[in-house]
Length: 188
Image 1 (cartoon, rainbow, N blue to C red):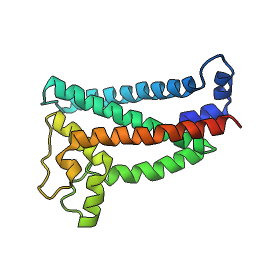
Image 2: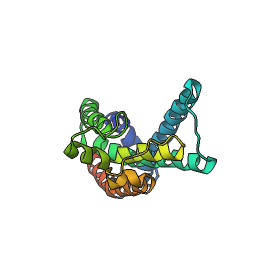
Image 3: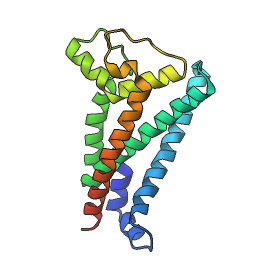
């Protein structure tokens, strides 16, 4: 979101659009570079985890699937970022919006604390949070599973499928909205 807003503000997108390329190639390039950037972050985090004692205890196929889920989630979030970056007029506005939404969403999940001790209404929200299913899925696939109680919501009982559905759903909804917002912003 920040990179796209900055590119639009600096005129980089205008220069790219003046070239004999398809208009969509600007977004494809931005999304692929963001995915590569995300992959580097995942690699660094994995290597750091291995250094401090984290281990993948699942099969190689499960480990690959876990990393694929992370990349799919990253790709879905890139489209959210493109939508926000195309809709907001300044890098500061993008930073403010992204921080004030992503920070609580990340903490209102099964990421850092178990949901069992939460009040029921909060637990339901946290367990339906797509980040909770992503976290549960990669923990399961890496063989570092934290079992869920029988009372847990459906996404935590089927986290891999739920994460696949969330990532596909978010991408299918956000990509067209992002393309429309980008076209509206850059064709003014």
